[in-house]
Image (cartoon, rainbow over all chains, first blue to last red; front, side, top):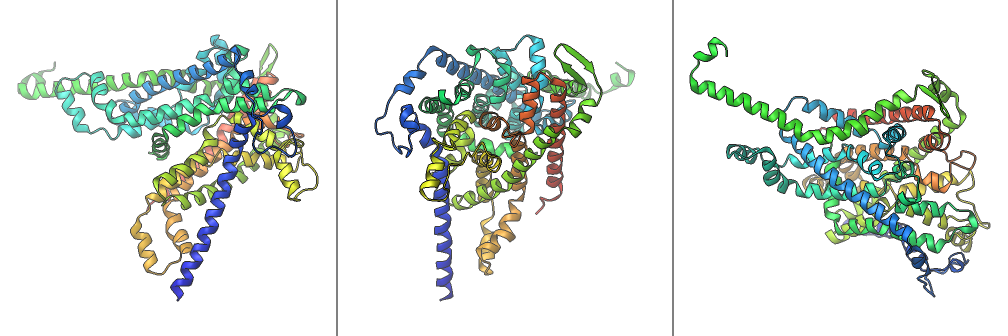
Amino acid sequence: MQNITKKRKFSIVGVLAMAILIGLTIFFIFPFYWILTGSFKLQEVAISIPPEWFPMNPTLENYKALFVPLTGRWFFNSVFISTMTTILVCVTASLSGYALAKKRFLGAKLIFMVFVAAMALPKQVILIPLLKFITELGLMDSYAALILPAVGWPFGVFLMKQFSHAVPKELLESARIDGCGELKTFTSIVLPIIKPGIGALAIFTFISSWNDYFSQLIFTNSENMKTLPLGLAAMSQGAEFTINYGLLMAGALLASLPMILVFLLFQNYFTQGVTMGAVKG
Amino acid sequence: MTEPLSKMGSFEKENRKAKRRRKLRENTSGLLFLLPTLVFFVTFVLYPMIKGIYLSLFKFRGRNVTFVGLENYEKLATDQVFLKSLANTTLITGIAVPIVIVFSMFVAINIYNKSAAVRSFFRGVFYIPAISSVVSITVVWAWIYHPQYGILNYLLKSTHLINQNVDWLGSNQTALFAIIAILVTTSVGQPIILYVAALGNVSKEYLEAARVDGANKWTIFTQIIWPLIMPTTLYVVVVTTINSFQIFALIQLLTAGGPNYGTSTIMYLVYTKAIVEGRFGISSAMGVILALIIGAISLIQFKFFSTDVEY
């Protein structure tokens, strides 16, 4: 008898929890639903009250308006910057993560400690002095200004060190005895083992580079060097009566869809990376 | 070569030589592997950090740059706008962090023992705002919150929760909370993944034993699960605190710090002082203060980690 009431009480709690979970899900999905449907609405429909929950007369006008060379350039800039950053970060971080995990050399401990300490600080606090430095180097408004600083950020090293611990010492030892050079050892033995880690790091870096709004905002100033998020931000900051919501939603979709696709395609890599990156040590 | 060494057996001598060579190889190869990272790190992270401290000791007025020592810091200590921004940043963080913890733990507890597909679905739903461009998020929320065209006012009016349109981002009573709501949606993704992983690692035997002893779900949660996932909670607290402290894009794009500095934050002020007004000295000083605050938070975390996680 007691058992039955207990079970029933739990299921009420369970149903309630499920209801809340579904409510939260709707709350999270709604903005994306609003972006998607809004992108097919003309301005007069977008600002009508009561709102149209679903575009009854969907239009492609907004996408047509986005299909101009400048937007294409912004899209290219975003893709190029994120891709280059990702390649450079993955190469440098996998080399040094492996070295810090598996090699014992002078200063290794100290360097790692400096990395961890630097990582504890948010990137944004160094951006103003970095801006001065970039200006002094003459790199303002260039791809280099948006790519190079991101490569120095030690998070990748930390993540790759975590993954490199899995490389068995015996394998490295036997490679050495076989007369394998250091680079050859790295490419033929270490690389295959840390591949999932590199995958996770690549996704992380690509997304964070794409979304590094603050850097993009302060390191660029010409229309041609804008990234997609930056261009969208400029569109949204016009005078009140010039804001075209349908167009903005189409832009918002374009600025986020690549990231959402990357995430959905590689969710497992991503989850593993998040979990590994969080384990301090 | 010294005398005694030459008297050694040739085998031992060879061995020593090999060892030394190996050590040298470890040292040079280790450093060479690290070199590319180090070059970028020193140039684009370490140097700007030091430069930031250096710049904070100067006053920038157009082309005029004068050394002023700690004057920028003294000024900030009594600057009403800075203090207001610091208070806002702290308030945003203080409200957002507990909500993020409760929210993500709630979601994680309800999904961690479900099938892999269900887990992936919910992880995706709650992570997507975090990986989307923050600009996309702000433009859609600006529309949702819009006093005339926004769906929020429409919904609240048609359910008679409000009688008049509310200017969510333009009024002192609501702007900060409207921002916090968006901040929370962009912050729970990673904590949920971490909690799901942490809950998956909680030993089934502990839970079974507690159940056999007649403990109810609440007791099991507070007595067993909560202490076991404490390290994850601490990590989430620190990461969320650091992220919330840096809140910038939401402010810049949605309220520009207004109304009347009601939503101005430290990072937003750093930006306006440096980029809009060209006052790099005082802006760098704010950066240094922000770094110190965040450094202190991280330090507390490391302390917690070294003492409180043994079980």
